[in-house]
Image 1 (cartoon, helix red, strand yellow):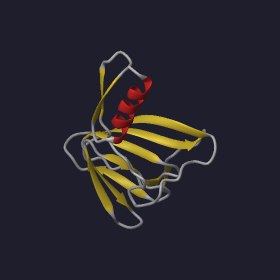
Image 2 (image 1 turned 90 degrees about the vertical axis):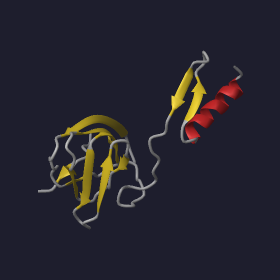
Image 3 (image 1 turned 135 degrees about the horizontal axis):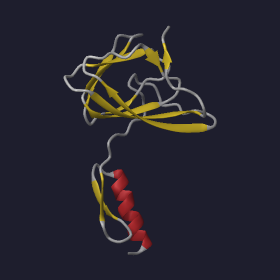
Image 4 (image 1 turned 180 degrees about the vertical axis):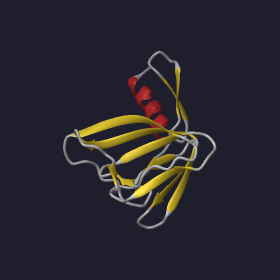
Length: 142
């Protein structure tokens, strides 16, 4: 397959809502975008770490009825809800958002918030942090 056609197929795959592309052997590859955001859950622009960026990936499981302690993140945190229903409340403003399976979250940066599993099943999250190398991305409120 000519290189230009292959490049065009991948460009379509990454810019449409769902697309079919082909790998180098002609095998179908389905690309389904899961989210695209330019701001956090509270409307802030996403600001990346300025030096020595480290990407951390974690899986979270939050039991039904569990509430996480009040906390904040100094760096960007992204989450994909794999299962369950999660309510996140900004304790500074009182505003809250509810996320369910299939939702993509860009967590607020530097604002105190907490999350509660409001469903009957565990919440399962795939979490990606972008931090300055060696830094932690969760600060608990004392």
